[in-house]
Amino acid sequence: MSIISIAGCGSLAKKSVLINAGDNKESVLEVMGKPDDRQFKGHNEAWQYCENDAGFGYDDYRIIWLYEGKVTGVTSYKNSEFGSCAGYFKEIKWNEAPDTAIEVRHR
Image (cartoon, rainbow, N blue to C red):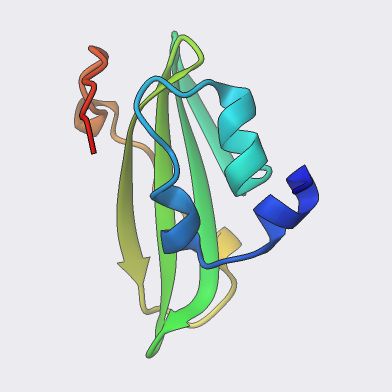
């Protein structure tokens, strides 16, 4: 399967479950595509993605947290304001970032 077809299909929620702690940026780009918003602080990055009209009257957002180029976690939030995703990205609160220690969970 090509990168375009991976990034282009499925809901944001379904794609984001494929992201694991320790994944590198290239893996995230393969699954999620280019982020809609990027914010930085030192070695920390937060990539935000949005899906318009994901549910009944809300947009769905995912934040992919990275430290030194590796995923440390994925969080989500919703917005019920009318408009495009671009105007409603959260300003990142770096104290909410997942711990930079990589936790490996066996599924």
